[in-house]
Length: 135
Image 1 (cartoon, one colour):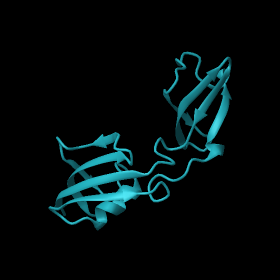
Image 2: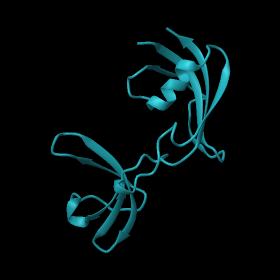
Image 3: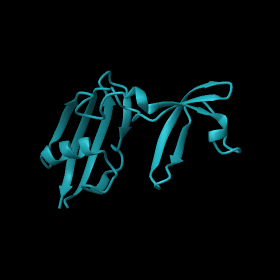
């Protein structure tokens, strides 16, 4: 697989910063899990040494919001010592060993609403990248 060294900036279509590596170049190998596949495909298209911007609609980027990915759970479904706070990320392991991360959206008594959608689901994004090296 190709290895890259690059600088990048990911923003919402409205300009709000999501993530960037403008001070320290990111070094990664395609498929290593550091970047989402939608961003990796942009990197594969980008030219070395040229600053490029990719505008991705939500369906090209992190997909739509899926209503079924929002789950209302009981407080007893969480570890007893876990602090339950709005916007906190929580991780659950399935019986098959897979893990899923969700964000606590609402707390109402013993009912905790957890959103398992990607945080950028439903959002158009801008991905600016400059590849410094490709091996």
